[in-house]
Image (cartoon, rainbow, N blue to C red):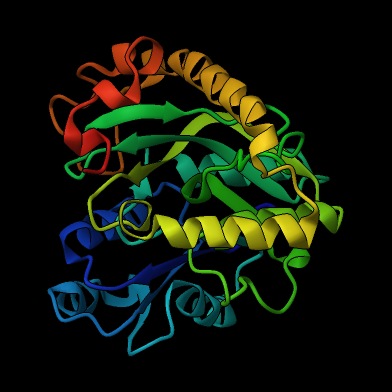
Length: 289
């Protein structure tokens, strides 16, 4: 476990605007035993040119697929790493040491199967909207709320099985994976660092197919007997309030070097958004409108 291979899986489709940032955030990592596998769904923008220019540092294909989960399952089939990370093409790692920190954490915690960190949600151009804090024991509330940020989560391959994701789900594939691992007995741990960015841009699914999200949650509720119904909404609300408060403690730690293209106004207004203002009062681009 001194220097395990880490496989980073990226599904991509017409996300060339952000793909270069994604590729750079992996290529600049201080930990070098990384294979970056990108499954592109046949993009018609500049994505293929960017992937072609990436050289041998990226394993990639560009061909039609059946959606995001299918693309990730294809990438997982190729992956050789002992540690698996998943970062979408419009997201990126936060600092050049993110994966090094994850490998060190796994080495120090041999009983942990799933390691996650905090995540910075950003606007399309990279300004931080809010810090998505993850609790120290992320599995405790997992049946009521998705406490893990997908781009900031890494899993030991040994606990995944043959298939990574359920392709019948189109929104909550990551949540289904965490629940599946949790009920199979996997142990979850948390790093106390921001590991990745989650880019809140208008083309992302949380802005375009909310009805699919609700349908997927209904499926998960039946599959895992979760606490996802409206009667548990107050519990989720309390969690989100606490997430905001605890996330504020991470703000003073936000400093370069960054692995993504950070704008000069990276944290402008962040403390107020984190602690004071309601989302309904945020600018439209921060609400995905």
